[in-house]
Image (cartoon, rainbow over all chains, first blue to last red; front, side, top):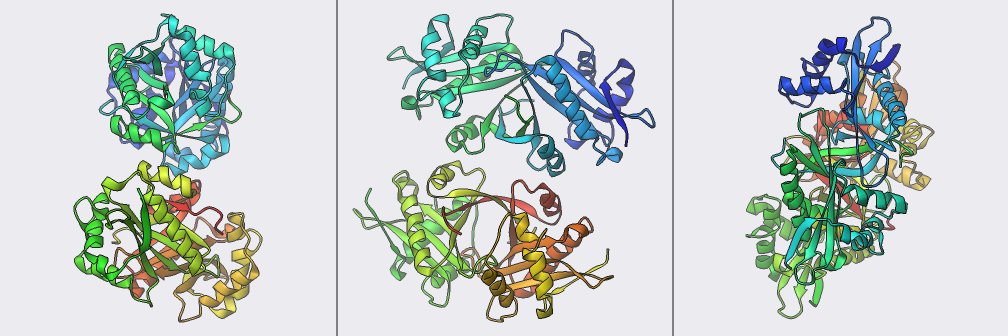
Length: 154
Length: 154
Length: 154
Length: 154
């Protein structure tokens, strides 16, 4: 499967929203829903130069169709002068998996993080997501940290 | 032990650097060192209004001494319009532990996050840090996510 | 706190049942109950020479009271000619904790396992049991294995 | 792939030893070696009626070749009158994976455990073995327990 990763464009809104929030999509995997206003706001931020929030999409070279995406953002850290890049969301359409698309999206984020001068790229995954971790152990490593959260937060 | 949590002040630099990078301090716990320029830069950011990086310190009411700190920062998320607050570092001097100081520092960060309008507070901890997790399970919950990282990053 | 560990005796039945199944006891910690027939059967096995099931109790030298116990059993393994010893249950009365009693019970099981010619001693603990793991990391190590179980089994 | 699971037979010794200890085999996966005397002893125990140690093998119906195995044993528990069955080892030849052979071997052990009157079947897996856990979450569940071990034991 030949795939190109490129920055998201405004014309991708419909297909991105479909992959993000549609049936069989990213949010559904997490048994989650988000208000439309949040999804729209996030999409707008990808194109707002004052916002450190970006999105790369995977395009099937044969069909020209967007089949996956990676969103990422940068933020401060107390441990470095440079920013960290957080890979917030990664998704590949179910019928296009096992063809290295996820890996290409992560490598794209690595390259973009280098351009941004970030000194770290990191992401979170659920303990139980073994399918994802089979990829993650190839392109990254488990840092040995887990996440705690304030109760009753969104 | 009666303790007050307040925002760090410029006069706290020496004691903060000691707790942060000195013997028996925070970085030592992580078997880490940081260039002085990073520590200084982080300290400066606490007072820079354009930087979303803050620090609260715990002061022993009896002695007036700074005995602990929590650093935190806010950043975007694709899942909400509001920011998340990340509790980056938490430390209480070894001889002042088991008196609820860590808990008070976390609760201070919760209150500051509310003022900032953040919709989530989260932090990371090492799998093996059972002492810390005995506290964290009281004031927060394990989200079920673990952290992966790009290799060879700082 | 001065404590002696010795093999359980028949006269200990009442106090053992209390620590095992009574209020504030071992089974309660696991939010579990067992039929009386099971507890009685387990107790009988401690004294049955044909059964590879044993129990050591911790006695407070000052009061003569039984304040904790460790049960253990041996079983085959495909990885060695010698047996493994499994530390099945470990309990110290809540008001006697933090005095090294748990550690002494584990060390007793180690010594008994040596007498039995066992080539390994191992046990299970819940991910979330941070208090226990603060001890376990001192006397043992996390093997990197977790436990799966057939659904709907007891 | 059509596969039959049956108890191991004496004539299977050579192929079992190959899958168990040969190149690309089970022990190699764990970066382990065992003395020949241990492997031979384990093999003998499968046929010794006084030993609670068994082995089922997977036979490719087309070629008649043994392509995988599951060893299991029963042992006492303090939590029940009946025994537990421990699935000690599970292996499918690399070129025969992703055809449901592992699942059939586990289901065979479940059925044998029922015949033995065991009230639980359980096994261990490494945190990092995501491939295996993709199967295990389908036929079993993570109990929430992890394994600690005495240092310097075999």
